[in-house]
Structure formats: structure tokens, C-alpha cells
Length: 151
Image 1: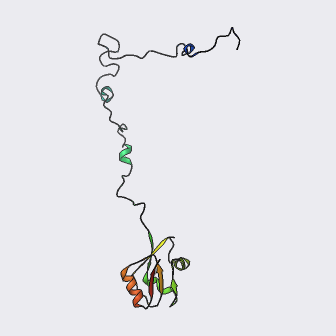
Image 2: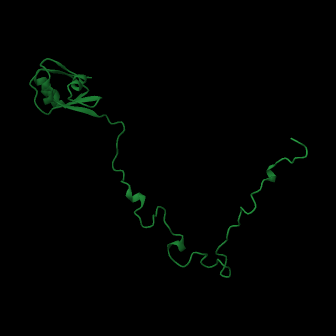
Image 3: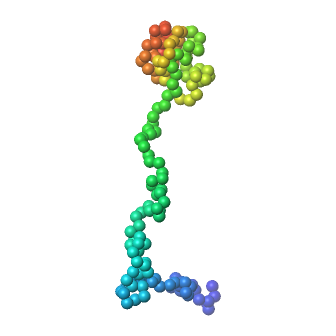
């Protein structure tokens, strides 16, 4: 840098002339121009500084428009694909019923765990491999001569 040029320092910085205006101080006595009501007119909501949070000028507020959360959803809930005992009649007698075979035949769509329930009647001897089973369904399968295996 040359010796005759002035170096810019922090104390040289200033806002541009005319860019800063003094704040108008209202409500400083009745004698002044902005005394008494301080430019707010007379009465009414805007004169009182009493607008509650969330007020939308008479429109139904957002807090009332949105649906409220009801109940509780357990993120760790185990969901089962349900198969009734009556639908197991589609398998050949003596065959093994697994979740994969149920999915192949289109008896369940959802992937994951399978539970067998007792609706319907079973007339064939089957080996059922499942994740969960009701006690009545287990009884029906065993009465038909089959067996149950929990995966």
C-alpha cells in the first residue's frame, strides 16, 4: 500500500447520510403533537394493544382449523398378516404351510409376520409353520391330524 493513501479502519465506518432517522417518541404529554392517544385514534382493538396471539381477524384460526391428534400410534406395534384356518383347505393334504407358500398362493399380501386364526373348518392334515396362532386355531389343526410349528 502506498504511504499517502489512508487506511480504512473500523472507526471510519459510518452509515450513509440520511439513512438513519430518529425514532418518533409518542405519548409524551398532551401538549405535544403525538400526545394523549399517541396516534392510535380513540378506542377499538387497535387502540388497546390487546390482540391475543393466534388471532386472525375473525377468520377461523389455524389452531381450530387443523384436526386434533386423537389417541396414540405405537411405532413398535407388530402387525400380522392374518390367515383363517378355513383358507388352509386350498393346500394338499399332508403338505407344509409356510408364510412363503401363503404369499405365493396370494392368501396374504403383506410381508412380515403371519398369524393363523380359527375362523372356518379344516378337513386336511397339514403341517403349519407360522409366527403366531390362536389357541382355537391350533386346536382345529391338531384335531384334523396336523401339527403346528412356531417360527
